Image (cartoon, rainbow over all chains, first blue to last red; front, top):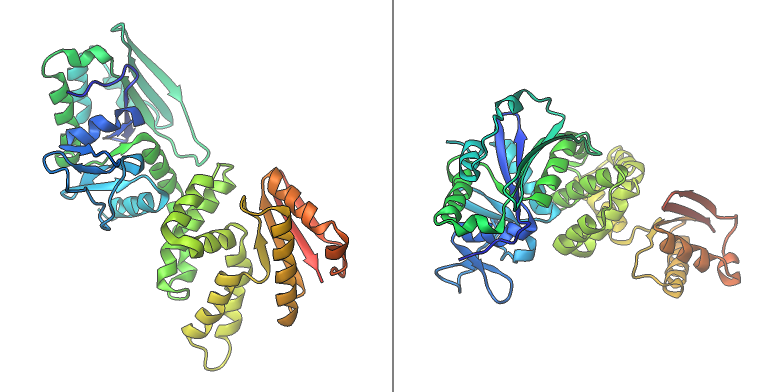
Length: 96
Length: 283
């Protein structure tokens, strides 16, 4: 079972009527786990039930936990935290 | 049940927060629940440098919260539902902040990009777009080292070159006029422009950007080499850009020696605004 540290935080951001859930770095493992994933010994996000299967971003890149930006629907798209991934994410969300 | 109500129920928040919906959008709202089981609702106003505003409601999860059976799974389910049912991304807070900044500057960047669509190589469009976001952050007084590193990590040297040229305003000051000039010539094709554009991006003959990797001697060598090459092409001016005290000092050290000074036909023009400096050398 995951034990969160005392200062683990979630921040809910309100945009008009929509609530977006964001997480602090300290709660990252909790979020990864919530989606049945885990971090392998090399720092990559992998399937919890099949650790040899790495989680990929939409453009097919493996994702290190240190560069994990979050998850979104479609069905589950994992994205990185770098500028280029965030630009793509924002453009995709704007198209919706 | 939506995210807000689900979390309220799970954490046993009893305060009536219905009035939050009426709070001005320029207000951050944070809810903190600490280890002593005290609940504190704090309302803060927060407008960032890009005038992007939001209401924040923060929950600190106490370590003993998960001692109660079912709480861990309940919070996981709320997290998954946010993606699957509410169709909202679950994001790292820093990523969310970056996304908000990108959103706030997207109209400005879209406008800037319009000119270059169909002109520069298609493969450079995403680099230039990222470079414009980088420049907007820099103009807002933010540290951009990590964002620039993101561009370099993704696009390599070409990414670094485009980011440098864009940050220094060369797309508007050099590349746009270059396109206008070339496009007025007979038999102009897009490829004519791209060939010249590639020379600018690859070599930036009129500019030199001082980085952390430069030391005084390496910089002096590069200046001498660029001046020598430029003379062959009839370019008699070199703009050297630096950000940060250390990099500015490297330029001073590299150009204030006899060998370097002998090449100059005029005193260098120096413009220093805070941590940003441009030295123009004439030869």
